[in-house]
Image 1 (cartoon, rainbow, N blue to C red):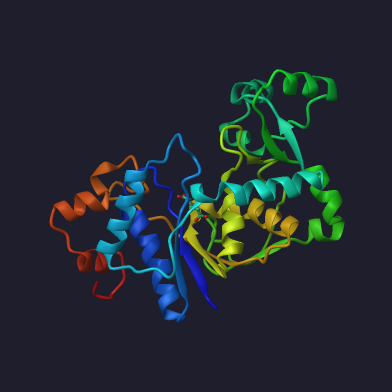
Image 2: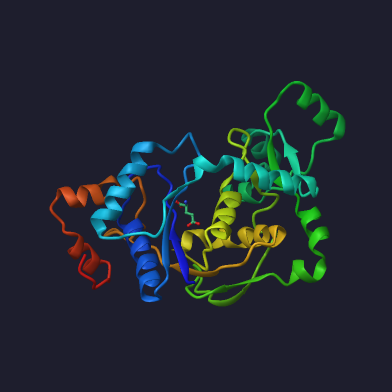
Length: 286
Ligand code: GLU
């Protein structure tokens, strides 16, 4: 059954961009006679707060949206993610990384910020790793692209694709060739929480039977690595519909820092959900 989701992180109040995204996914689900699930992506304890989760739920209800089944809160399921990490680890697909963000930055020197996401530091030397483990130093688990390529074989590695029914930032649509190296040896388990975004999101999309991932173009690049994780885990590949990001009056895209456009503010100013639907291009009366 057509199943899509809205998966906000409770790191702040929802803004108009979130409302557009949630309405896009909800409308698609209802039009298809399918399911719309709500997932709270709160695995980062340094940025997420329970009061924002409550606010998200209140804002979505105000918008007139309803969702199917229980809300899945990722922080309640850390054991599920740990089990996936363990299975990838047993297959030799992960290596420990004790490096700090600063170590990595120093190693890549003057490379642009984006390179941070595509680093491939490789495993530590065995004796160094043993010493760090002995010291009780915290470590992350990184995906080994070398091992992933070996496990999948050249044909699969070179032939990964996903279907984009929306469009990427450069207008890319249709069958998209995946660059499995796009995110480098990505961290799948953080030092502090034992899980990271790409792992939790692909696990949950599979678990919740998500057939259509509908989200903003800012996450288009993430699809490459997520497709790789799905393949390694034997999880189904959803169809993707990335949508354009809403721009504010100044032409910049809405972000959580723009406090003035939170739904809470708009509501306090007396905006009705119906008016917001109309402004965002959705005709249904809330
Ligand atoms: N939790 C992510 C965010 O708030 C969205 C994840 C996704 O849609 O894949 O940006």
